[in-house]
Length: 270
Image (tube, rainbow, N blue to C red; front, side, top):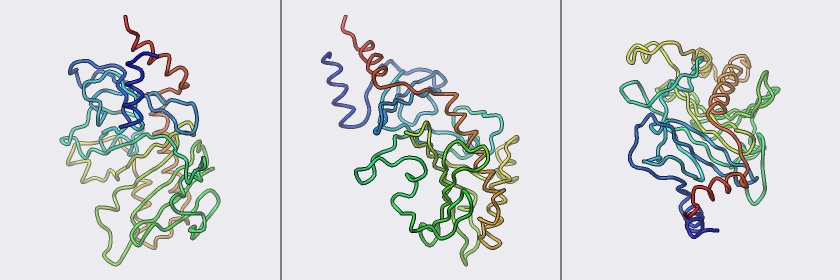
């Protein structure tokens, strides 16, 4: 093992970022590859996006990290039927942060599948449930659904939303936080926004279908009985499956042995 390799491992363990290749400042549209190492298996999630979509890519061509934060337009995962994306710009609407990180042991134990999404709560906090969906309150203003096994669903999904109170609806009800799994050992955290007419006209946006999210908001405003509308919840599931496919199209899974070979090759001393 080379000295550079030892230094790299020290950096990874200390601050969570291991530089594999570094070049001078490059075009924001050029591809950058990130390696995310699993904590509970020997998997490595490899993902490639334009430099501009990374929060901390700087001028690197490749890097290894404990988690990756991306910047995407709000519309990217909000009913994006064509999976279109581009460099983020506030001139084109809100920019959301999206994160991929490994699953970690919870209280010293490996927890997988939908069970991972209960933490730091417990299944005892489930207030109501229907087939495939459980409802939990987080606090006085937020609730979440844990969804698994619905039609065409390949990965469990946690949906966090703002509940209705005496102050009525606010801008917070236009946003939803989603958590899902990529290849079982990695968590994807992202947001969607209701692409309503006012927002679309302001930023000249078209071609995005978030009727399911608007319908969910309408139920919250009416009576809050979201479990009475599994067809609306299915809309979030279908949207989530598109998001998963989006990241699969820009990534792959390798083993840590394969990652070590790539890393050793990049740091071979001539």
